[in-house]
Image (cartoon, rainbow, N blue to C red; front, side, top):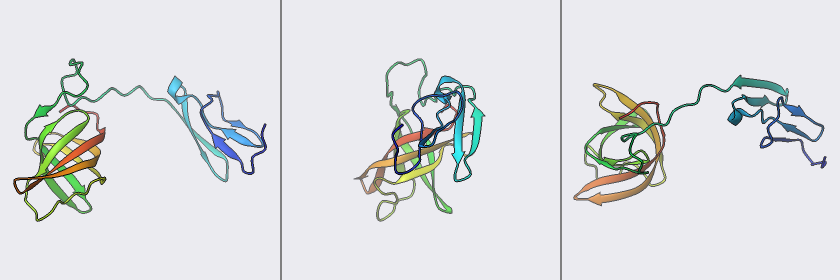
Length: 161
């Protein structure tokens, strides 16, 4: 009932339908509880809702039966990172479902990625199947004249490596 200086659009309190009031609009239509996801177009106050789809299943870069949080695998799996129009090629040193430790295929005078940089690309062989990913470069190390990049994964498409 508080009179804010502006109209407040919020969620957090699930409702069956969008709740319009003079001081606020609640658009939380309980998507997390298998109902609908709702967006509000302003200034028209046009509502867009979609029914929640089937739950997605977790993507594992390891054996799904293993109960450890971060099983690391060693091995060279191709990684392709998009840099504008170019694609930089890397290979993994090791990896888990949470991240990659990778090195560039071609040596450069300096690192081609930056710490904190968000990256996107594919993991896997382009001759066979690839998995789309997004991540953030957490650390860059120079070893034996080559650069290694620790990447925290934030998204991996619905497939298994």
